[in-house]
Length: 281
Image (cartoon, rainbow, N blue to C red):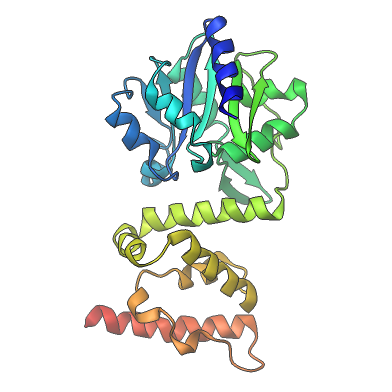
């Protein structure tokens, strides 16, 4: 399938377009570390830095202007799309100041009184968004970018922007839609893993030595779903960093005829006490 990506690259070169790499730092291995190692980080932006999401900057999206587009590292990315490292785009001229403003205006989703981050850096998300919108709506999403190349459902997808340039967008944004259940779950797991690394880095580092983090998170999601816990507070109790105390404790299991709300209140009381005892010890 790399032939599809190669044809896209050749086409961008023939039109003398410059390349942009949109990086998802939740990929493994971390593309940013590899880009620095390959000496390709000459012109870049960390999109969360300097915003209200600065505490998540190390795990958020980065924009990298690829000034040398014919590198072995770029081809290594194209050969490993299942690592979901991000996606490629092109423009007549890459202006990171303009692109930074463009994506910061689009990275926050506000709907029904709730706020969430739009993970456009994930190739699966942007691919589905681009497939969802009508052709005349693509400029609202891609803005100054002329073309995009992303991997989704085991194949490369390219999307042309019919009118590159500055573009406003209507609310609700036309590219937002209800994800299939499997995709929504993957995105939720990505967000939870990002939360762990940002809020509990030391404990998560230790966790990674003992478990595959994604599998560990999947098991906890299965538990809260089985227990009928639906709020973030309920889930985050199960993700508490005092895992040495909390892991596999019998008090987690609901008692006969115990409602989900009563179950959570009891667990919160029980494990808050155990956490405090562990801290004092």
